Length: 140
Image 1: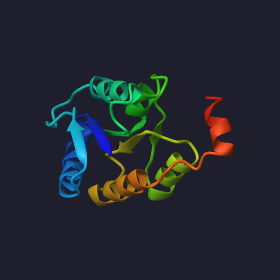
Image 2: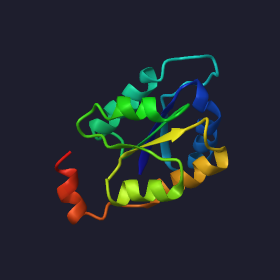
Image 3: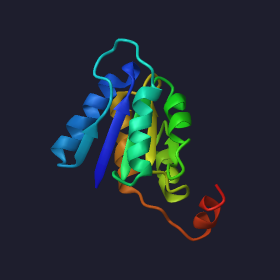
């Protein structure tokens, strides 16, 4: 599994915690996010993640901004991307099982680092169920 991660200024602390987790687990992770809390524009970080996932250079993308909405809207402009805004483990699980999401979007201002880590663990450990869900994915 390889992961690409991007964030704006609101997501710096969560991103650092996630990268630490990936390093401990020896999961390949490319960081294309902001490393400062100085205000930046989230699309500048969402586009590189979405582009690499769209081109299947990375299995999973993670995007973090204040609400998670901006990065999700940006990422979902790419044809092979299914970006899901997740604020708890159940939503993350369903986004993978039912929607075959390949980018996880996290709302940094509404979840803790610990919650983000739980959501990420769920997201990366679930897989697509296929069957009736495949038919629905094909209609997107």
